[in-house]
Amino acid sequence: EEPCTPAVIFDIYERVAEGVGAQEHDSIPEQPLIWQKGRLAQEDALQLVAEIVEGTQVDRNEHPLLLAQCVRHIFMSYLPLPAWNGAVAALCMKLLYLRAGLPVLVHVPIMKAQRDWMSGLYRPPAVAVGPQDSETLIDGEVDFTAYVDVYTKLVTLKLAEMKAEFDRIVRRDIKLSHELQGTIDVNHRQRMLLQQALDNPEAVFRIESHRAMNNIAYATARADLLGLVERGFLRKKKADHAFVFTVPSDLRQSLSSFLGAS
Image (cartoon, rainbow, N blue to C red; front, side, top):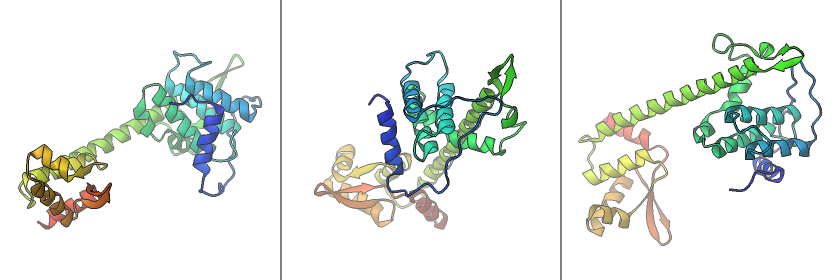
């Protein structure tokens, strides 16, 4: 909820850098191919990034994807931070997407796609042009149309990859859910708990809430949850003088192995 300022950006950098050691390789500033850019001091660069993220001093009709590309360009051209400019640039871009109401883009590895393109991994016909042909001069002015076209194409490629992975997980979980019906020796309440656990790996279950939801005795609710713990499908731990039950990270693997053995 804080306004984005140079101080906030530097705080993000300090959190990124904390405890990770020195950057192994010095950052190499990206140089424009056909034009000479002016120098921009560290404070001025961070101030410009902050204004773009906040939506001040920018054309509000400009698409957030292009504004985010400006953020990336400033970081990677001027390297305003002592290290980890790429990591902080990616976080600032994500913050911009959130402010613009495009939260799905927070999960798209846009910086990686950009690096892959510049290293030659993406080339025509997957994208319109390579890096060397992305900037052209027209009447002495740089035309970034091809560059912007490539950038937006990379984003759509990554969105398509993310959707394909999402669809794969949904299909896998639907199949797993169907196989749970009648195959595994648990009651209908436990199947409901397992389905919730599959849907939300961060779920936390409590005996009292399970009892109230199903209108059952406390001992029955306790037996339901402990039964899943015994099979390795839930984890039990103490919290605030009571037991809570969490989802193990390998739940899908455990269920698949169990169903395969059955």
